[in-house]
Image (tube, helix red, strand yellow):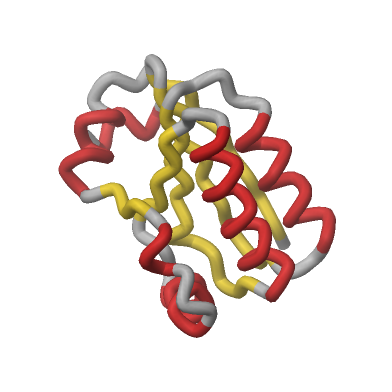
Length: 119
């Protein structure tokens, strides 16, 4: 099962992904969620991604390139083991900025959501 949650915090959009990014519908939902944001920074929380296929990895590469071309900072937060392995295998992990725990706590501290309770 695939779920996606979007939280806008100031000029940052946090997109939490859960489940498997292996089917076209999940891949295109991820693309649409990122491209529809008007934020200057988009953080993809990939900690709960259980599996990622070639289409999902390709979409991450596309979104990294799209974000550079559209002056949007794209960061990955806590990519799961399957995501890290896939990006490493494709030699594309170096293209991504990883958000640190401290950065995420700073963002979440300003949130108006249940996630802000963790910060």
